[in-house]
Image (cartoon, rainbow, N blue to C red):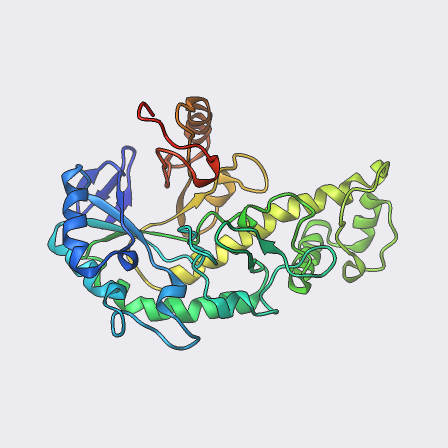
Length: 351
């Protein structure tokens, strides 16, 4: 039995603070796993966390490697070793994992599928300009994305189930990763794909019930919700139709919550007896909402990641205060201490 408590996490009746070390098993030689885990234990950690990258394990559509080809991909053996070393494990299967991987853990054949890609207002694919190479951003409204994700997750299911409950090491599982439209969170960047527009019109129908009620707020004359097109930017001086633009901004939050809810549902069908949590990227503002994330059925807690620059305590204080007043279980799922690659300044000895 695993559950969040006021001070941390209770695993089989023993309460522990929720501090973990991190290891990426697939980036570490199998022969070095024991040494690395021993070093993590030597630092005082009783819990480790790891991503489970989709692109690593399903290297071609329908073709999987869980150690049969490359031994570093043997997730089952890695989790068994953690159990032998009495380490609890937080698993983070994505599908978005970031982990500074090109494609953020998505297989290339997912990202290159036109039916899955998010679109900009001109109908072309939105790219994420990542340092190691740009890649197409998947749409949170794409049914095909979730269908393919569930196929992969069902392949993970027997491995994860073997390591849950009893003497199993898995104590928590994360739903997706930093669900915020891949940091493209300004309102008119994306998503204008057909599936996203359909979801937008569904949102409007839920909000207004009738086109007449919507027209009254918009000062427009749409014959039905299907005729409504999302705004591609604010038209200067159009203040009488302000609700039209504000609804699109509200829809961005609606879409993120719907996406995270679908990911929680997929994980729930894995039937793992451990809590599900989520990590918000950095926003304590719309379109991300810790409070509304925690209203998603099956999601136990949501925190906000923190990667402060050296000496930047002001951001941390603000974030922790926000979480203390907003989250069911205030915590920082990812904490970086040091320097980020785009700071372009080397750490000093003092730092």
